[in-house]
Image (cartoon, rainbow, N blue to C red; front, top):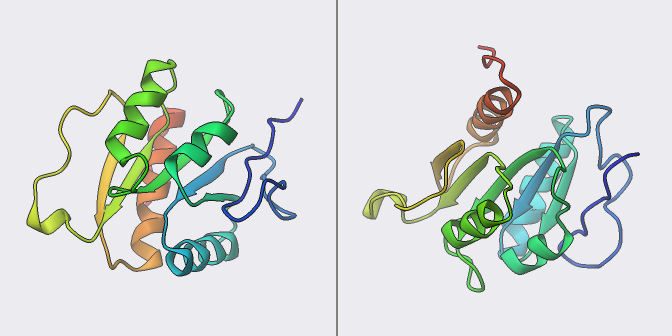
Length: 150
């Protein structure tokens, strides 16, 4: 049985056609900025990744089904639930989802401490899609026990 699809940011409807690859790996994208979220979702889909996009941490948690394979790309400073709190909430439910935390303010402050175990990488905004894709390959490979490609 296939995992349930997560709701996109602007509706409680299933993600658009192509939301799941044959291996079931999805990029879960959480960002409050509509323009950033939409642009990233389109770029990731164009690169062949299924994407489930959300505009808040709580919306993601309501839709995510434990065991859904993938990678979380989340803005550090969500107004409802910050990235660290989101990851701690997942960990409290015994969910380890590799994550890439993005922020405009990473260079001005130290990365978040107290994160639960698992693969967590940080990416300064603005960033290029190639850099994000490289990090996604790394965290997905690490989660599957494989070494990332070059």
